[in-house]
Image (tube, rainbow, N blue to C red; front, side, top):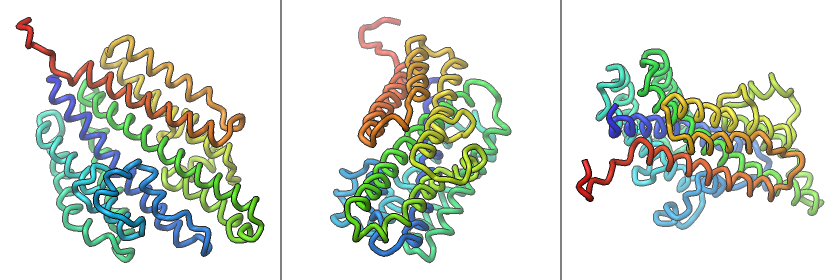
Length: 325
């Protein structure tokens, strides 16, 4: 397979996963705000914290209000974290890799692009937002389902899955980092400020439930862990579950498997295995919120290194400036 085709498949998968994950996160958070008691809302800045897009956001907006944040995440075509931008880029990568994918994949991605391009600007308001986000989730899942059930089990699919799971692990780590940090901070504030405790403490279970909902993990968590929502149990499940497809451990294991199938460099494979080991060794019960944040920072650096290793191994064109054949 040509390196440029492999790279397009890889990025197609990353952008589709990014669009779906952003839609899930925004949908869950929008519902949470409606359910929170007055005075206990975390604020809309939390969504920008999650995707680490402060620089890009401040180029366009000065205030972290609902309209600005939602417009930035849904409709801003120049924001590489927005749904509109992600679907546009996914379409471009599918367009230039159509020989590898079934014809219907192009049709579905193109239809998704046309829908998002038209509907996103009108979906900033709450009355249209939820239907739009559910439609984005449904359409991206349909594309993933088509690819999973029709693409040959060869290099093409392995590059697609590699991109998908790197993006998913990155988003899961960001969501856990920011959401868990905010929840633990709210809990600490409530304990220190008795006057606010009556408003904040009843909302804490809602915040943990929303964290699970934003990753579509509610049903899986209840089956595996139970109905009680505790910080240790939730973080541990989202980090170390070997059965839940959106946990970090599951994603890193899939990354390792696909790099192995692609016969990637041994050094890169060892690095991924070491990352997987570190994830499984992390124990949320033994660490502080600061430890959790530091661990996730290190994990995101490791995921960036894995992406860089993949780029160097398969996507980077050899330097022929020296005249070597």
